[in-house]
Length: 158
Image 1 (cartoon, one colour):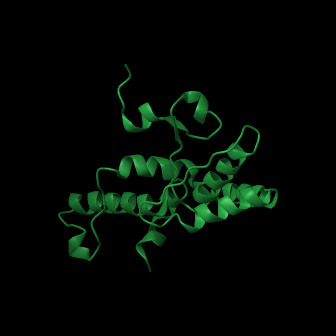
Image 2: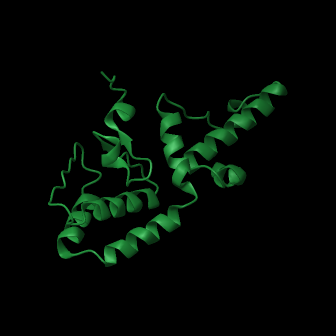
Image 3: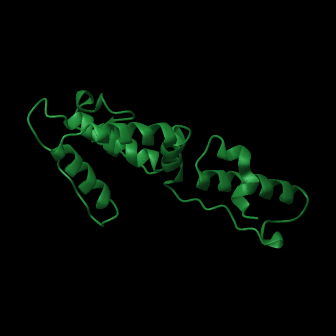
């Protein structure tokens, strides 16, 4: 039986990686109180790095809504015009490419916000992370968890 099946309580509120780490930390505390360790029972150590907290906050925020987000993205895709669906498909197909960068531009009223929201919903629905960043709060107000560049990257305000 895989370890992740042993941490079902954590899976209710956290992504798979965080659930496994939390279960391992609990098991490790239990074993340490009894003079033992994870290694003595052939269990792996929890995996943590300096970015885990931020990543896990983002993954956990959308974890319970993944199915809803995926359905919303699929519904939106069904109503997109040909240009929007081409852009949607292109971005999703190239997400894994190193250094992939996309710039979506168009006149007001062409559906950019609708398109970007659908892309965000799809990626989050698939368990991925999207960081929507804009130069002003107004530019990210329509995106859930959208942030200004100052907030996201720690740029000092003048």
